[in-house]
Length: 125
Image (cartoon, rainbow, N blue to C red; front, side, top):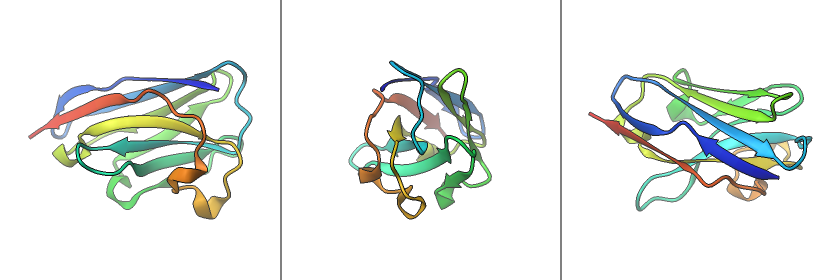
């Protein structure tokens, strides 16, 4: 599966962005897809994930109530709606597939196989 992420940009604190990730090559049929982010000098960290079939969602604590992950299965597309953005949300955001993940490991980096190229999100104060 090839992933193409888009939608990043430069915004002010409090504003919103919507990231998209299109999966191409074949219709995605794995267990889940997710978003990770990596800030300069930091490790890549889990942001959110969604079970592709049932739609159950998972979030890291720092984005709960502000970010919403969703998917459009016919379009093979993953979304991340980011509201009330903060300067600490600044990072490169990556989408990834987790075709065989178990729920307890849905936030673990090694559960994810294919990765998109990343899209930069910069939030100014």
